[in-house]
Structures are given as C-alpha cells and as structure tokens.
Image (tube, rainbow, N blue to C red; front, side, top):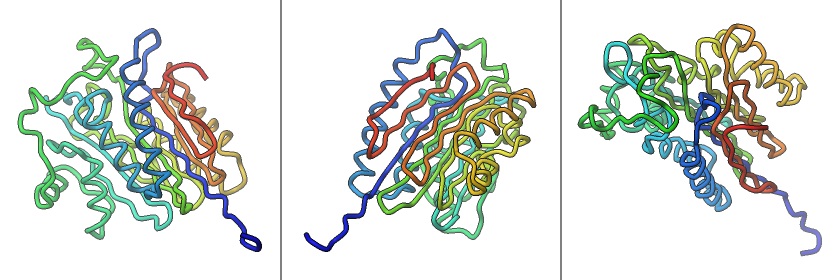
Length: 297
C-alpha cells in the first residue's frame, strides 16, 4: 500500500546444551534433538510467540529429555541426591525468577518462571523452593533411582569428577522483546548445597532491552569473572557482543575455568562462543538458517 512503511520485524534464537562436551565423543543424538527443538521453537517465534514463552519451552524440553546435565540428566551430589538450579528473565520488564538447590521437581525452569509470576521474589532455594513448587502443583520425580539417567557423552566413572553441563536458551521475538533461561544439575561431584552461576540473575542469565545471554561452564569461575551482566554492560558501553563475550570468557580462562556463552542481540544476530573442548549448540534467525554443532567454529 502506498504511503505505508513496512516494519522489518526480526526474530532470533540460540540454544546450548552445555560447554562440557568432550572431544572425540559422539553427540549426534544430542544434535538431532537440538535441531528438532530449535525448529519447533523457531515455528513458535515466527508465529508471534513471546521470547519468554519460547525460552521456557525450550529449556523445559531439554530438562525432560535426559540428554543434558539438567533436569533428568543430572547427577547426584556427594550426599547422594540431585539438586537443581534454574533461572529465567524477561528483558523488557527485567522481571526474573530462579530456583537454587531444589530437589525432586521435574522442571526447575517452570518453577522459576512461576516464582517470577506470582511472588515478589527473584529466587527461592532448597526446601523453600520445593514447598513453593508443591503448593503450585508442579510435577515431582516419583522415583529418583529410575528417573535420573546419565546424559549423552558422560560415563559412570566421571560422575564424581568436577565436570559440568548446563542448558540454556535466548530469544528475540517479533515484538522486539528479549528473554533468557538457564537450567543445570550443576557440576558432577559437587557438595550438597553448592550453587553455581546458572540460577543467578546477572551471572548465568541476563536479558535487557538490547541483549539476552545464557552462560555454561564452571560456574564458580563465571561468577568470579563477572558473568552475563558484565557482557551486557560492555555492549551498552559500545563494545560489540563478540568482543564483550570474548573478554569475559578470557577472564574465566585466566581464573582457571572454561565455558561458553550464547547471546542474541538487537540487530537479530546470534553469538555462540566457547573456550572449552566443545559446546552443544543451535541457532536460527529470521535471516539465518538453522545451525547445529558441538565442535568447531
């Protein structure tokens, strides 16, 4: 129609299944799952779904799959039981929700979002988080001994080592809204009550008006390196997302850890960077085809 300007609406989405991939191992099953998941999530975004709904959906699907070190694929701590962490954030409102060291729920990310929606709090932890989840009617694990499984690429001999894995999703929707979500079972062999960066808003998860970020890696080092919000602040100050992410990961490496970052930016681009052996990852946007990989650039 003459006189009407067409608004160029963009969407973008990135997923990660953890930066704990070990070189030489076969992650084809994981990559197939990521491809199907990002295609389904892309369809939702293209149809007008909110970034917040899409990242929650994607992370919940990864939690329930048993393929990643989150949800069903989580290993017990040194006390013999599984503790889970998760967080979610809406960039437009800065509303956020998180759970830390929660036991026995099927989907920590869904509990985290409900905390955001119906409480004045950002995070609930431990027994308080579980009591809230039960009050809200969330599904619980009936038999931990049969529910939890070793995820793809992890061997029984490694569950007492400080290996790591996390899942995350970041999205920009057609309305221009950003959201990020992250979930994990934490490092293998962790002490009871250990909490890493994943449930910490500003450390493992961040979303604002310009960028959405989810981190994976050794949480203690990510926290000490400034985490996701340090990237967002550098971008706001004029740095490119690629440079800001590289600088944060370099600091993680300097401190003795490793990890990876996924981000989506205001221009609709996706960034997926890691300094570990590999990172299970997938991305798509309104201008880029689906990409799925574990190793390589």
